[in-house]
Image (cartoon, rainbow, N blue to C red; front, side, top):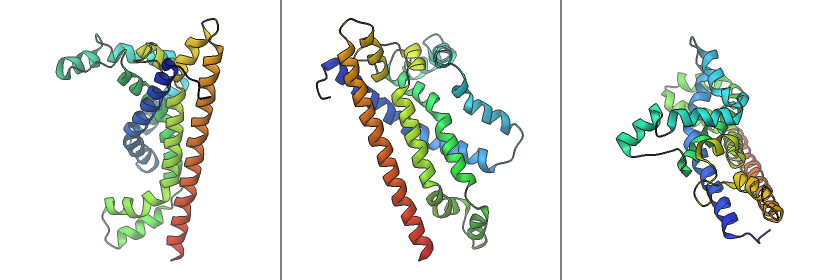
Length: 234
């Protein structure tokens, strides 16, 4: 498993970077959207939910092509980013981050929304009656209770980003050392004679990383649950 060549290491490192950055970038927005969908009441809520979950039902290549149309150098958003900030996303590793955020966002929102909906609103109401402002109620009551859901959503988003292929290769291509992520590298190795061994090595590494991520999430979730239980019994 350790016998990876330079190209394989580059793909592995880039995948870990893209997955980590995408998860961290998506986390605050996913939590806010999950809260809105779980607790807010407004017209158009069903439309927002449908838009959030749309990447789950669209073919990833379609999502990647839409990103290319919107965020490419000639796209309306891409042209604006380049003219104002000199930022280019298409065919850059930062574009792979954007694709990973888009594809993993629905999974993160879903896990967090379920966790928020499982919290008894009476607990939050009790804190408000004691004079706690909304932000304090969220930080001291809601957030600890939904922490396992946040962890689960983060792991799901990370795993989706790590395995994202269709939208990424359509939006940023498969450039070794620049945009070639782990799935793209595996695909590329399988297209050349004698590349099966390199592909298998990356597959094994992917399995190890996914297992470690899930195990760490389970461990952290148990720690959080024990802490919550201890606080309730105190």
